[in-house]
Length: 124
Image (spheres, rainbow, N blue to C red):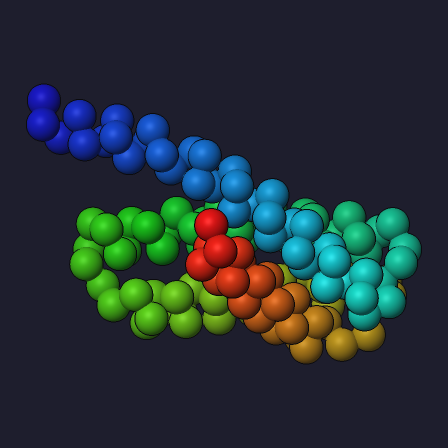
């Protein structure tokens, strides 16, 4: 029964954490794209879709590895962000229409959203 209670506690806060993180990331990376001149609907939708693909997995794996595995926070963050940049870069390269440098765009968008998220978290 102890394990079930712990699982329930994880679920109680994990879903809102995933939803807030995804929503904020889509807004921030969409803003980043807009600031870099991405204007066509396809590419703006692609920014949202790649984040639906990567963000929940990154956030979930971050929490699991920090809370339950006790891994180093910085190492986990760096590895997961690198994986997200790679996955998103592949998506932008394969499906982007007006994103001229998909790998740089992916790295920049992720850095921008990570830094802005960190600043927002400190302010809250």
